[in-house]
Structures are given as C-alpha cells and as structure tokens.
Amino acid sequence: MIRFAWLLLFLSSCTHVPAHQRGRLLSASMSASNGLEAGMDAHLHQTRESMIGGTATGGISCGCN
Amino acid sequence: MRLQLTAAALCLFLGATASAGGKASTRVDVYTDGDIDVVVPAVLGGWDGEHWEVEGRYVADVISGATPVWTPDLITSATTFSEVRHAGGLATTWKPSVEQRVTANYDTSVEPDYLTHAGSGRYAIELFERSSTFGLGYGLSAETLGKVDDDTLAERTTTHRVDLSWDQIVGRTTTGGAVLTTMASRCGERFGCLANPYRFVDVDLEDAGPVALNERNPDRLYRAALGGRLSQAIGSTAAVHGGYRFYADSWRITGHTVDLGTKATALEERLLVGLNSRFSTQTPASFFRDAYSGRMGSAVVPMYRTGDRELSGLGTVQFGGRAGWTFYAPGPFLDLKVSSRLVRAWYRYPRSTALPVRAAWLGGGGVDATF
Image 1 (spheres, rainbow over the protein chains, first blue to last red):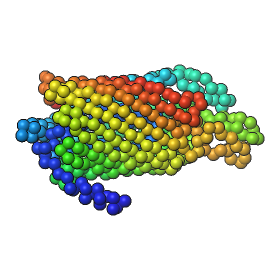
Image 2: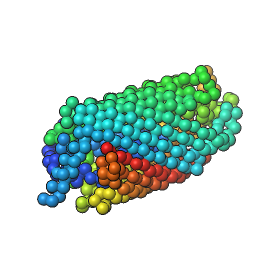
Image 3: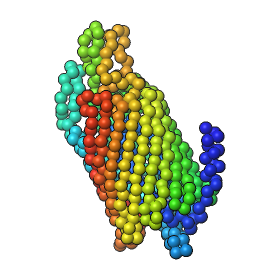
Image 4: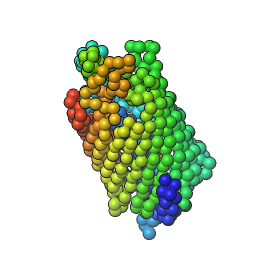
C-alpha cells in the first residue's frame, strides 16, 4: 500500500501542464456533473444498490489563480 | 498560438470569477419504475470568495406509489403511500492558500420514520505545480431509525467514513483520478444495518411451521470501494469519459461498476450534448437465502434474514442522454445554463422470483447561474 502510494506520488510528479495550456481541460465537454445532479445520482444508486463510495471527483485545478 | 491565447484567456476568466462571486442552481428530477414515483426538487446557493466559500442546499424526495406490505400473519397486499423526505446541508470552505482547501460539511435528512445528522471535513492540496490534487476526508453520521406506528422504536446507526482522493492532469487533453473509500457502521441489534423495519421474512420452521419474522441484518457493516476515472478530450469540442469501481464489504458483497460517456459542445460552447451509460453487478450478501428455514430453539433461527432485493445480488444497465444551453452574460449573470436529461435503467435481480426485473425512467432538468 505504501509502495503504491509512493508510486502514485512519483508518477504524478512527472507530468506538468502549464496553466495556459489547461484551457481544453476546463471546457464543458471535459467537466463532471454539477453538484445537484451528482447528488441526485448518488442518492439513486445508493437506494437501488448496496455499493457506495469510490466515486472519483474530477476536481482538477486550472492552476491560474 | 491562437488556441493557447484562447486557453490563457479562459483561464484568466475562470481565475477572475473564482476570486469572488455567487452561484445558484435549481433542478427537478422525476423517477418512476411502475411501483413508485419520486419527484425530487432541489436548490443550491453559494458564494465564492478569495479565502472563503459557503454553500447551502436543500433537496426533497416526494415519494408516492404502491408497495407490497408484509404482516406477521403472512398477508401480503399492495397499499398506496405518500411520503416526503427533506434533506439540507451547509458547507464552508477555507482556502489558506491557492493550493489548499479545508472544507466542513453538515447535512441532515428528515423523514417520518428516519433522521440523519452527518458532519464531515476534507483537506485538499494541489502539488507538483498544481497538476495533482490530493484529498483526505472524514465523515461521521448518526442515523435514527423508527416506525411511524411505534413511538418506542429508535434504533441508532453510527457510521465513520474516510475518503482518499487523487486527481491528476495527465496531459493537455487528459485527466484522471482515483478515490478510496472506507466505511464502518455500527447499528442497532434489533434490525441491524440497512434493514427495513416494515419488512417481514417468511421462515419455515421445522417445529412451528411457516412464520413471518422481522427482517434482521448484522449490526456491523464494514465497506470499502476503490474507483478510478479517465477523461480524454477528442478534438477541440468533444470528450470521452470512463470510470470503474470495485466494491467489497464485510457481508461478502462484491461489486463492479463501469461507466462510459461522451460529451460534445458546439456554437462556442453554448450547446452541450452528451450520452452516458452505466453497468454494475454485485453478489448477494452472505446471509441472503432464496428461502429461509430453521428450527425454533432458545433463539430465533436463522439469526440473520433479509427480504431486501438489493441484498440478493443484482445487475444494472443504464443509458442516458443530455442537452444543455449556456447564455453568456445575460442581465446580471456571468452565465446561465439550462440543462435537461433522460435516463432509462434496468435492474435485474436473478434470485428474486417476485420481481426479477425492474425498469425505470429518470428525467430532469435545471438551471445553473453564476453572478
């Protein structure tokens, strides 16, 4: 587990996209669902399934402020 | 060069709007599967400042329909019902620096026979020139389960939850992320975790014949889920999204969830359309049986029994589409987004003879504004 965490840290430190090249990542087609819709979906899935959690956030930074 | 200038302008715009501004959203979703209809109105409002963010939200579930009712004398009949669940929450985020966020949440949910209080906190930090975002969250919830016809029943559940998240800018057109969630619940001993106090289970006892006993699940539940997702931009206006989640818990339920989708924009990002799909499968709980039998002794046999289809093992398939339109700078707003979606879902319960397949529609729409 600790080795896996170090591997993630190593891999994540290898990539860097400057702020002025992140515009495509912030476009509407790349965005995740908004708060209310995501909350509705999570509530529906929790009601209809036993599974919960492990849902990635997609919370990247524009790196520009 | 032109693309880079556009991207830089967009980034500066987003940076400027992130420094101070408000947001407001409202939407209504409708779910129907033939047995129940649920109307879900929701509103959200927030303010985003340089060092602080605040957000408030309210959601209601207006549930109506017909549902089977089990009674101790094994009479099962369909009865109509109507119920409203009110849920609200507040969130405050402190930004000690541009790379760090500390968020505190409080949520509550109220039903005629159910009350939840939940608090959580999350710390997130951006590292490696803000290409990576790491988050650590902890949540504690306290639920009280009751029955509308029994004032003496108040079973309490306490749940601890820890989330570890990692979001990564992989390249100029690619993002990814992973989340590890662990949860530990301690529940009341009379019904156990996730049990429905209105539901009875048919048990064939050797020495007493068929009887209906209250559903009873184990009073401890430990859960873990690990999920990852990847988003890849296609050309200048489209993107594909994919995700996978593995789930396992102490009731020996394991599950897999896959979601795939695509989004595309047109008319200078005013029009957004998308398609999405979701597939999941999960195994039954270790104590689930197609039919329960036992012998009446000093204790009720079998100790754990459930009539919950969601614990019998299931598979789901879901397809949906969406469309939205963004108005830029209309009146006092920075932007105003109008969106709608329609989803078709099928739930298959291979070991349920009463209802092996359920088909459902989910539709909704809303308005999101920033100012």
